Length: 476
Image (cartoon, rainbow, N blue to C red; front, top):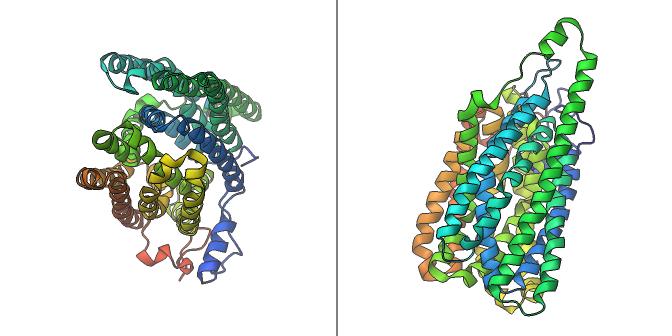
């Protein structure tokens, strides 16, 4: 993934014609100045989400590793469902971010179209989930009927927020992102109170999963209605400001996602591959070591992915800029975002490991001390892969080729799975962490190569700011 202004932020630069100062500190200072204030607002929202997410993790984990393992796998299945259809929202974001100045299109018909599609796809997914739940014999798959009931609603959020993502308008996205875990935490508080009477693990899992899907569904419906209202008001303002031939152009039929279904489908498949890349190790641990060990390892995964807090905030806040039609501007913005993402995660990784080593067993219980070594194995790969979100935005929003992101994620997934299939039976969760890190590091090297080729930049452009100016023009 704030801008207080609904307009997409313009690409900003320093003094005109001046070369960027050399040096690592100067490069970081330049990159920070090039980012909009949206990054700070989104970072604050992410921090709130992290706090709420950690509270959710602690609340669930203290029910025991088995409950935590079932919860982690259920959320992984839900995430796969959501990412499969994120192409609808990203198609809308691309339509909004690539509109030429003065050639505004109507947002409401496009938003209505993708929301209807999201509900329809959600209903189809519900049928599949009900079938899996009916035939399953093990937790949490026997409870996928809960996800089936919520599927048509859950798909509304990644679809509706595409409107604001394309406009560079971050605060509604931030509110939706924070509200979802807050609502879930309230429900989990009720589940915790009920289970104090000594409920069994299966009853506890049912209560926890019910709280999860209910809280997220409520926020999804509210988000969709607010997005529809915003789109309607936007179109009315634009229509009032247009006249004559410009009004005629404005009233033309807006583009439909149906005409670009290959693009939408490619994004969905790409994102599912990316999700499996992040979560395949969980299923490998469950396959070889059982649900309780999966619960312990899932805490290491959750902690490691905290490193992506800043990188996701930076990418979301500059997503519309990375989609700029001018390759120089889009590439320069991508390089700035990549530098911040990688530098920040490399600095934060040892701090995160130290805090986890000190506090994680104390907060969640002694059983989770076993997650510390897998966490240490995950951190190098997670830190390196922090650049992936910005590079993926360049492939998708600028080039319109999400299949490139899918190929990179597929490479990482293949390496992680193959190495994990060998190491997890030998080393357990530690082997899963090593396998994931290996996949991340190899894949991100390939991702840099693909980006530099399409941006027409030399390799040294990644660390020598003198090669590009903030406005995207080449420097001698």
